[in-house]
Length: 154
Image 1 (tube, rainbow, N blue to C red):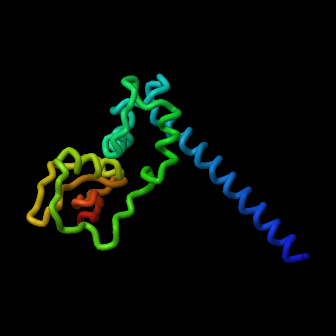
Image 2 (cartoon, rainbow, N blue to C red):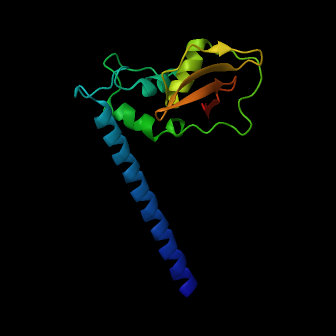
Image 3 (cartoon, rainbow, N blue to C red):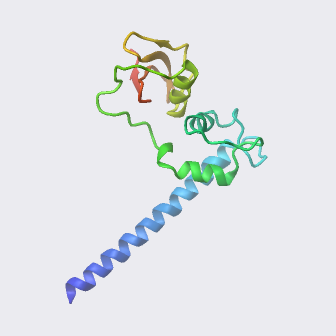
């Protein structure tokens, strides 16, 4: 019987932790929206949230003309697609790249690379350029799969 009670307590604890994590995620998304909404109009413009607009273009999400609403931002923010950039092991991969330069730039911007220079498509099918990540200069490479790989510049 002690094993059964322990199992019930563990299940209850796990459920409580999941609920707390979800609430924390919602609070984080709300705080992010508030911080980005610099004009206070209740919608995010492309100027206020360029990373998020890039992500919506990548995911082919149609937005209202007024911008990203709090409800839309909350749904987008909670999406796995909004997580930090984690390129596949071994990326960038050589291959036929069908992205335009603007689409490659959106991918870099969606993963927090700002100030991206002109990109060039190399002979391996990888878009390459330079930018900033968390204030540091980086080389950026975007492969045909959409992996964004950054390398600190020395």
